[in-house]
Amino acid sequence: MTGYGRAVQSVAGMTVTVEIKSVNHRFFEFNSKIYRAYSFLEEKVKAHLQQYISRGKVDCFIQIETEQVEEGVVQINHSLASGYIAAIKELCEKYSLEMNNNVELLTSHTDIFTVKKAPADEEGIWNAVKGVVDEAVKSFIAMREVEGAKLKADVLSRADTILNE
Image 1: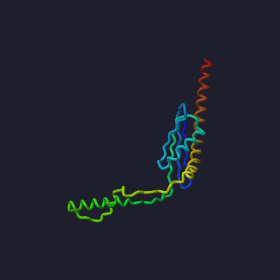
Image 2: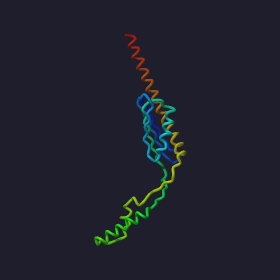
Image 3: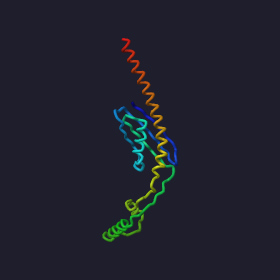
Image 4: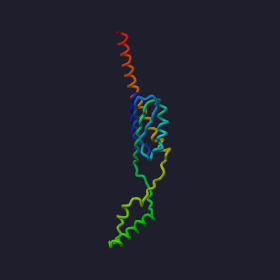
């Protein structure tokens, strides 16, 4: 049976959006689209959904937007920066160019910088996402029940037509 469920909630400083959709399939086949930073959620969501959905090709989309700016530390690769500076000096000397201390030129080489973010609280994020997944599953199951009732009515109607002819 096909189905669709969606839920959006603001939880723990995040806005979490979960969409679940499925089409008929003989077995449970799970596919998810989650930002790479939250890929640790994939197996947890799959196991959680299997408690409610036994079969079907299930697609789950999870979007997490943090409401606060994540702090990070910018680190400089000093040896690489020194290499760029030496190369620029060599160019200036070889081609008689004026050497200026143009920091913008140096900072355009983004490989000099690395941004390190604090590790995510995986358990806290899972607890926040789990509640939203539960809401989306409720909506999903309700839609499947409506579709099931329509299919039942259609089959009974056709059976009645066959028996009465």
